[in-house]
Amino acid sequence: MTGPGLFSDIGKKAKDLLTKDYYTYDQKLSVSSSSVSGVALTSAAVRKGGLCTFDVGSQYKYKNTLIDAKVDTESNISATLIISDILPSTKAIASIKLPDYNSGKLEVQYLHHHASLASVVTLNKSPLIELSGTIGAQGIAFGSEVGYDTSSGVLTKYNAGIDLTKPEYNASVILMDKGDTLKASLVRHLDETQRNTGVLEILRRFSINENTVTVGAQYALDPQTIVKARLNNFGKLGALLQHEVIPKSILTISGELDTKALERTPKFGLALALKP
Image (cartoon, rainbow, N blue to C red; front, side):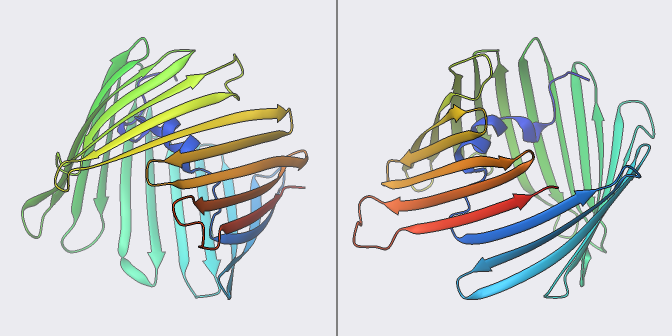
């Protein structure tokens, strides 16, 4: 179903272009497989600094129900249950991360052609409540979200945004952090496939009188290979190369360099995701 999407979708295109797949600090290997019965298994190893962690996850999908569970070497367990279309155009998501028994959340989403609503409630004695909604049509969406702490009786957040999406570009403006931060972004697609793209993001923090300007680009070298780069006004340069080694199996090489402190050692990351 097409529609304005959730409030979290406002500005998401620019955010993904500037942050997604930049494995600057880690070396990661993940292997996943799936069966026709709806069962998928994933295992991953991550090396960060001198430490290695491992996790194993499983996913089971049956009709409109999805169950996702993961356990890692630090004895953390996460589980998510997603049920779609309990009522028309709705989705319910329940999640928890153990051993933190207070981490349980219940989210209900309603998506329609011209509006969306989402509510999130933490499952503990003093729940946090978050509500968000968007309205829109013909590529224009207006949205807002608010968070409320029932234990203290104060608003934890209130944000608002506008998003404009056309085949050639996407533009968004978000007022967040209780009005302290204004973020504006523009994504410009250079071809019909939207694989060659430029992006500009401007972040203004009023309380500290600071501006952050980030420019980025994505370019497809061939159908299996893309390169991405980003640079902000503080001199942080990031880049990555992503190549589909075999169908659905992706190799990502990324790095980050502080151009204003060239004496510092650049950071590199490597990720390999295998899907037989």
